[in-house]
Image (tube, rainbow, N blue to C red; front, side, top):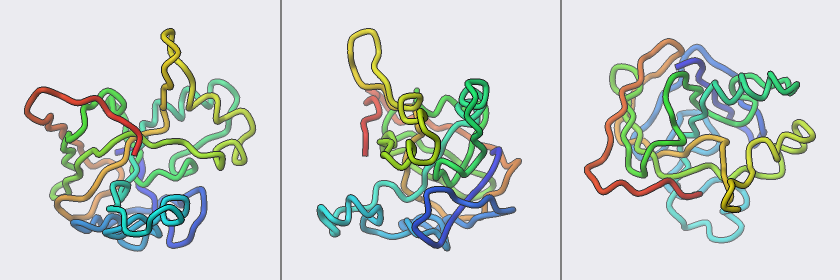
Amino acid sequence: MAAVSRSGEYTFTKPNHETITLVAGLGVAGDVHRGVTVKHRSRVARDPSQPNLRQVHLMHAELHDELNAKGFDVAAGQLGENVTTRGVDLLGLPTGTRLRLGAHAVVEVTGLRNPCPQIEAFRPGLLKEVVGRDERGEVVRRAGVMSVVLAGGEVRPGDGIVVELPDGPHAPLRPV
């Protein structure tokens, strides 16, 4: 892992920390999005009883590298992610993939992050860099993946990530 981040308040960016603690069934201890039911404001407004499929947000540091090369000043945690990875093709994983983070924590990938307009407010022009269309006209979301915590534990920068694919057939990631 390249970085770990959390925020106890509804802020777009999340400060980096030396360690975060994942709590089974809830999310990141001390993070505003922690809980069994949805915590993202737009989802709470629609139906506060929905299950929280967005307990932990993971984003690949390679996206930060690409955005920085295009002139955007973006660092780990600034796009709201809790875990910044490097060397894992997060967007290519199927739904239900388990990621072992560090010695004990395990998350299950539930789907793609659906980027919100706050990204545009953070850096003008950034939204079109993380949401676009492919050659078939299909929407492509590149702002990381969401997950739920199956097994808790502390995670920190430098910890390893082990990818465990679900039994087939694999279902592609959809926005959650």
